[in-house]
Image (cartoon, rainbow, N blue to C red):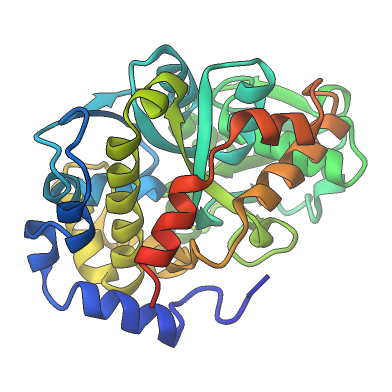
Length: 340
C-alpha cells in the first residue's frame, strides 16, 4: 500500500487532475465517458449535508454532478454525520460519503446499504488533556461523544479495542454536542475528544488539548479509508448508470480537492458551511484526497470489521459483510477511465 507523501498529491495525481481541471471549465462540460454511456435512469439525486466538511467532494462536486446529467440535486440537511447511515438505509438519500466504521455497523444490522468505493484517507483526530499520553490512558477516564454509535464513538471504540481496552467498560462516555465537548476539553471537564473537520483544525488553532492520534499520518489508521462512498441498495440496483456517474463526479471532485485546495476551500465556504476559509484550506491540504486509487476499500472494511468484531460490536464475520455489502464494479471501471 503506497504511502509516499501522505499529505500531498503525487506527480502522477497532479498531472492527472491538472489535465482535467486546468480551469473550472471541467464543472461545465460533460465527460466523454458520460456522453458515450446510456441515458440516466433518473436525473434526480439525493445526498446528505451535515456539519462534517471532510465530505467536501460531494459538496463542491455539485456542478460536476450536473455535468453528468443530474438536473435535480437535493441535499438533505442532517444535524449530525451519524444520521447518514439511516438516510441511506431508508432511501431518503441515494448515495453519500460516510465513515467506514459506522458503515460496517449498518451492514452488520442488515441495513439495505451497499459500499461502492473509498474516497479519502484520514480526517479524524483524537485530542486529550495533558494527563492523557496514549489511548491506553483512557481507561477509567471520561470522553464526550455526540451520541452513542455516532462516528466518534465508533472510531474511538475501535481504537480502544485495538490497544486492549474494553470500550464498553473501561471508558466513561457522556453525550454532548461537539461545541460543548470542545469547551469541556478546554476546561478539563473531560479527558478526551475525537473530532472531524473542522473541529481538529479549531482545537489546534485554539491550543486546546494535544493530538493523541491523527488518522492522516498515524498507523494503522492512516493505512485505511476514513470516508467511503455508499448507496441505498435499491437505488444502486435500479440505477446503475446514475450510480456510476454520481461516483465519477464525487471522485473527480476529490481530485480537485487535492490539486486545487485554495479554490476548493473557497467553494466550500461559499456554500455556507460553518467554517473559516483558513480551516477549510488547512483541511484540504492535510487530507490526501487524491489517493482514492491507491488504497483497497476491501482492506478498509476488513480492518474495521475485525476491530469491531474484537470489540463485540458486530456479530457477522468480516467476510460476510464484505461479500454481502459491497459492489466494486463501478470503481473498477472508473479507475480505468480516470487513470493518470
